[in-house]
Image 1 (cartoon, rainbow, N blue to C red):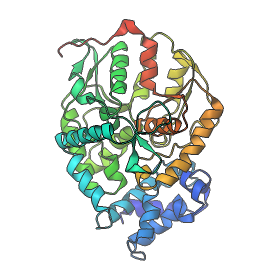
Image 2: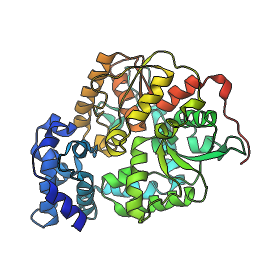
Image 3: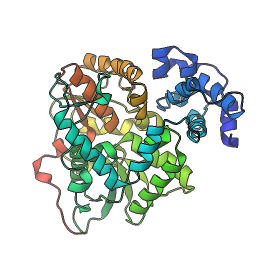
Image 4: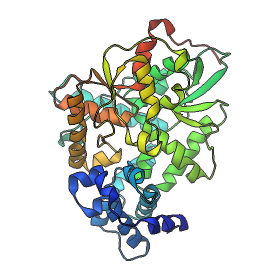
Length: 413
């Protein structure tokens, strides 16, 4: 156990405040499934009083890492550091599911192999049965748990986008980090971000050498893979000389901002500040014009509000260009949590139900968010219910408001 984590464990007074905000505990009511209980379990693991068992893994991997507990903790315990170190300890043993270790290590750092696997999945979508409810075509996830994966794009964003989009002499230039879901399932979100950034006067690089941010590997405690992915992304971005690296996924932004400096031992390992798309655009909204039709609401991604501490900026953007309203439950968790939803599908759906119930009460024309994982989860849940509620990325809303007069220009850099 590191000195810093030992210090954080000692700060926990076991007051139980985390019980009132933890999405997992609210559904399970199990002490081992809340931060207070997990702190005690992690300490026992570190001190050798507990061994690696299936039950212990259930408790330590059954955490969304939404960090709502940190936000509510009166003792300011950094629970994220504790759970991450506990998972690294477990991740270094054979207890980590072999298929997860093999699949991630083989694919995530090898773009060509990843592309080939995704292409095979796209072919499978054409022959396997699809959900009947809703209009979105889905491949049944794990063939029977009631959830779906989004339809894979015919061409990934990295293969369809230019290396640079914008005027060659742009005063401001940024780089765009895509993330896996945007790259393979939602390339239209990447196009929307570029269009908005161009309209705001920024040229946009999309380095083809970028790989997965490493969030799945971090969730399972595979520190070596996280470091390898961080190094590859650093090599892709650090030499571009941009003013910022813009990220359109809350989970990816949390990784690049919070995990990479610790893993690589550098304050700014990617060579430029990492900013969420809404965080960057909030400083340039005066350069956009137009309105988005309809009433919209915002869904706070956990990794944006509670990890990156960003909630005001997207709301201010939406208020400028749409009929925006807040509502009770805006920051309810959607239950996605990356690999959490794969390993705990039933629990993920129970957590999602709280969110979709709140959204149905709000009855908006569009639900807007800033995380591709949240988009996957919410679109899947509404599709399963046969609902026509639109779930959009904030870049898509801003791009619609920009209008057709501000198409991105594609010049050589």
